[in-house]
Image (tube, rainbow over all chains, first blue to last red; front, side, top):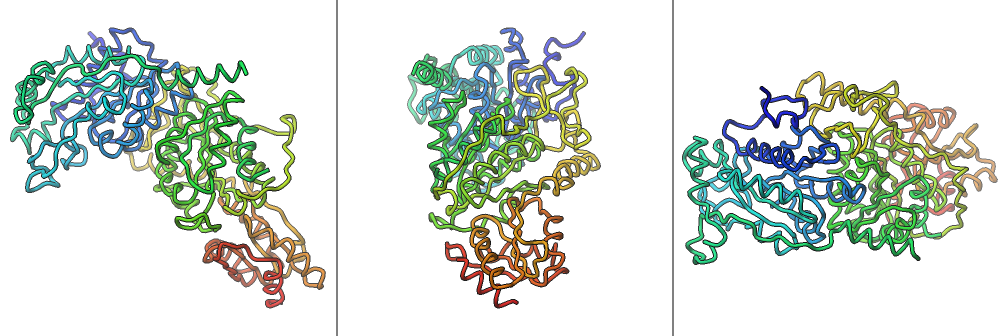
Length: 272
Length: 366
């Protein structure tokens, strides 16, 4: 029997290119479950990725897709949505792709409340290029470009998007697949800029070099053991939160989308 | 009309309905006018967070079926090379206006002539148009969209501070006088559609987001179905097609004017603002009995080789005035260097050669 989600895979062709035990496969599957449960019309969807492991997910989806340039996914998305606001756009990106090189586009797409769903895979490093420092890498962590440990602080991208004006912001890990599917469903149903950070395992890089194990199960257990809910985190001191992953929904509100503001402006022109 | 406004009107006449830009002098009037004009014709304007944002928003809008454009000036055009590379590889029709300026200043120049051709990474051909007047800004921006749609490639309108900020009389033709080219749409059902298979003209048909064709766009090597495929021969074939669809049509693309080239012993080859002084200089030389002529190039890439070779066939001296350190002259040498002596006339002071200066050069080489 065919897997229920295989029909959403381009050409029904598997396997994918991700390493064994990679979180990208789980994110792909969670997205497909969300699409299936919401019964979305994939002909009216566009998936957009930049460069990096997670940005390759769009290439596997049986829908219009842009496998784009590093960090530029939300710039493409802005053009697509203003050209055809009726399309549902899902951006698949990584912590380096949208937190570093694409950071400016992330800030401004959130500020504009562009009606797109961003799923950001945070694996704590530049994995496709071999494990360099990412803006999300934990302080002290050894990477190929921090051979004496990371002397910088990690970036909380959910807080960034919240501050910039995102109207749906949530973080889960691949160790909570049901909650993750629920969040993606909420993000896809949300009208406005939805940002879902998925802290995921990278057994090949992060696991091997930072956790000391490339066993996928142990990597996922690490995510599970270090996840704490937003409610728990609110009662903790900042030093107790070091190394913890705060999960939950942080923002969910309605504001006019960029597309709405154009329509409003254009209606006035027609009247004039 | 202001040169930069003529660009806007040429674009709208060609069907441009999306513009994304980022402020930069001397291109600002293009954005400002687009912000005013596009909503009046059912189009959309957005000011992006940077030039990278602009070029990719334009790519996204084009993939969603809109004719789309951005405009910038040299320093901003540097950034856009990244997106131009993508648009070449994914075969996205877009138009980019580069109003050339000197480093960091609003100072006229023609120094981007090589960047316009070679700036982007990867194997590519580029169509680069070089207007010399406000009416030509209209005409060539219009043609830029037609070329972009016909060849599915980025097309560059290489304007200059000199031309863009100038006001000249212009007649805007009615729509019945204009021949608008639109991209070819698929004619087979989705299951049979090969989105990257070139037809006889090597250009594939193009669907748009929201229809049933579900194409994957990538700058990775891809087969005719659009599937990412790292096969050496496939890669070679792909980029042969992407470059040959333009290179093989260089003579069809060629846009130029000639003045007394039939018997010109001294030929001037010029583009953009530098062509303006040449017209007067050639007329003055003729009045003195000197057999001078002008080949005025309205596109410099792909190189209009045939036009150059025909114009230069009886020329003993070929003068190439440019407002830079002498860049395009090397291309001219390569094409017609065996017909006559090619002489570079650079003037890199933010000012074009005056007709008198050019006449003196003509007299000197007689």
